[in-house]
Length: 178
Image (cartoon, rainbow, N blue to C red):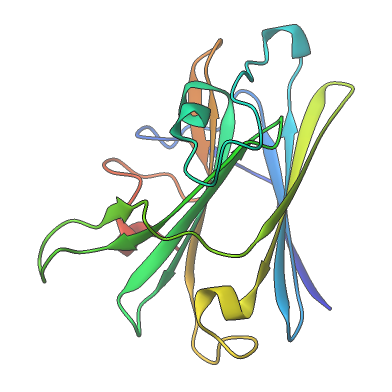
């Protein structure tokens, strides 16, 4: 498998280094994309997770919790995906689409992809794995043209939203994905 790691997150809308860091490991082969978030949390008692797994893919209650979002955009097809989870393994997914050319990209929650998650808490951090078959994103294997990505983390009790490629504006601004 191929692998990459991201070691630095920045505060959304300011670009400052996040006070509490997140690492992301990307591993992929001909069949899957695996994304692992490693979220440092100096005081797990402050960590917020209440939305529980098993309530379907579109559990938007996770956005009231500490959660992570994986944003993927395919510029060739002009649409993308948002996949999200909290540390209990509750999940949300949707497709990023424009209503018409020139409109902002919005999440269409009707899309429910086939992907898997594994969430766990360990001392002073929580981790989430996403395993996404390429076929879920409409590819036979590793895409031949580059995808744009961004990785987001939201902390609620000690408010901080951070991301790999931080920018001012809407999370779904696909032009800002790297």
